Length: 155
Image (cartoon, rainbow, N blue to C red; front, side, top):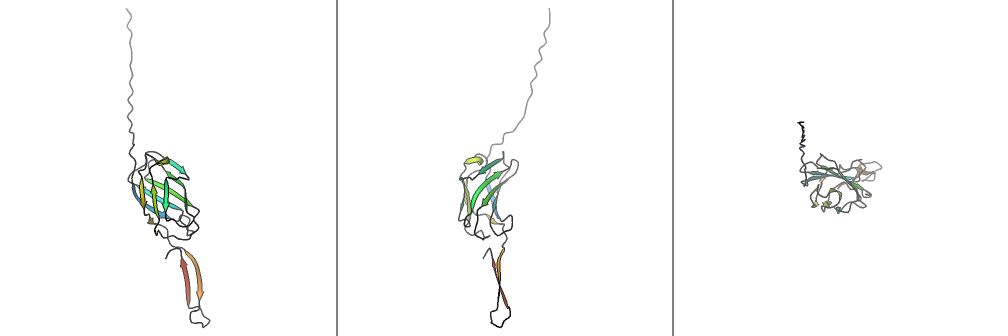
């Protein structure tokens, strides 16, 4: 009589699927290259992203009352971080004040399931004022400069 030995091997794999979308916590408007034009909004979420994403020329991310010419050209998020970067290009208005600028996300597109929708959020001001021009003035007409009129990117 032959004995047959069966070996059964079971491998258990423990893994955690993180599927909870993250919520808006805060945002920061920035002039990254210090040229007086807004070029980025960094959004901080309430936890880390479960996956990376890139969305080029997204329509689900919108700006309300942006500086003249400003358009969102890319939105990115990196797995394991709580930061979403909104890249803005085309700005022609030298204005580093937040003013009435608002950002919204409708919950669809590449970040769907990763970031919850949010609407009309005002970013904090992370863009320092820049000098646009400086003009010497002779206010009492005595031929000597007695004032310098400096114009900044913010009022």
